[in-house]
Image (tube, rainbow over all chains, first blue to last red; front, side, top):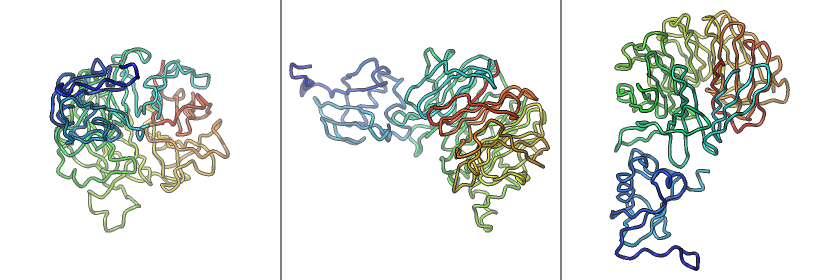
Length: 99
Length: 357
C-alpha cells in the first residue's frame, strides 16, 4: 500500500489482479491473485481451477455470479461477460443486499 | 443430559441441559449465517450442518466437535451448466445402511452420501422426473423437507416436497412414484384436483417407526394419516383448532401418536387465540388434546416452522422441543404434559434437533 493509503495500480502489462474478501481469502489462501482471462467469468474460472475449494462460492451451477456477490472492474460494477484487460483490478465483494 | 441443535437465521446454537430443567448454550457456530438444519449422526457422532449463505450459496459442513473446525462437504450442487442452481438444503437424515445419509433441498432435490456426509451425490432419478418442469413451489420454495426411512430397509424411502407432494421409492431411489391419493388441497379449484402436477403443499411428514407403513402428514390445510406406506391418505384433522401448521412429530414408541402445532391459517401463520399449544393424538388422529401447561397462554402470536419441532426418547419420557421465529425455545420432559422455556432470545429459529444424552 502507498503512503497515501491507496492500493498501487497493477502494471498495464500484468495479468488482471483479482482481489478477494472475507472467507474467499481463506479458501484461496490469500487476498490477491493474478489470473489470466479476457472476461470476469474467465478470471473466476481460472481462480477456481487454481483453488478448487472456491468452486460454488462465487459462481453458481449455471455459471452466474451469485445474487449477493458484486464484482467490480476498476471500480465499475461488472457481470460475467464484462471484458477484463491486463493491469485491471477486479474486486469480488459480498453485497449489502445479502446481509 | 440432552443436546439440542438449533438452526437459526444467525448461526447454529448448541444447547445442553435437561428437559424440564435448565439449558445452556454451549456453542455458537457459523455466526451471522443462516443455518437451516443441523443434526448429529448417532452412528458416528459426526455433526452435519446445512447453511444458506446469502453470499456464497447453500453448503453442508461437518465436524466432530461443534466448537472445533468444520469441513465443507463435497458434491452439494446441481449439475454444472444447467438452468438451475441449488437454493437451499432443508433437511439431513440418516439412512438405513452404514454411512448412508440423505439431504433434501430446493429445488425439490435429494442428495445421498455413503461416507457419513463427507461427500454427496444428487439422486438422478428424482432430478430427472419427467414431471419436474410442472412442479410448483410453495411459499418457502420448492423444498424437499421431509425424508422418512423405513427402519431396517435401505431400499424404501418416502420424501415430501412442497409443493410437489409425496414421492416413494422401493428400490433405493432408482425409481420414484407419487403418493398423494386422498390428499385434498383446499386452495385449488375442484377442477384442478385431477391434475397430479397441481401443487400438493406437504409441510411435514413423519413415519411411525414401530409400524412403518403408517405415516402422519401436516399439509397446507389438513392433517393426514397413511396406513399404506404413503400411497394413500385420510384426513385426521377434525378436533384441532386449525388444521394449518408446519411441523409434526411422533412418539417412536406409539404408532397411534402425533404432535402438531396449529397456526390460525395460511393467511395468518401464528398460534390461535394468542395461545401457544401443542396438540397430541394417541388414537391415530381420531381425537386431539391440547398440551399447553407452561406454554404462553395469552398475547403470544408465534410462528413455528416445519423443522422446528423435535423429540428424543420415547413413551412417558418422550422429550419434546420446539422453537419459534421469535427466538423462543420450549422443552417438555413428559411428552408434552408440561413445558418450560429452554431459551428465550435466540435469533429466529429455523430448526430444532434433539439428541438424548
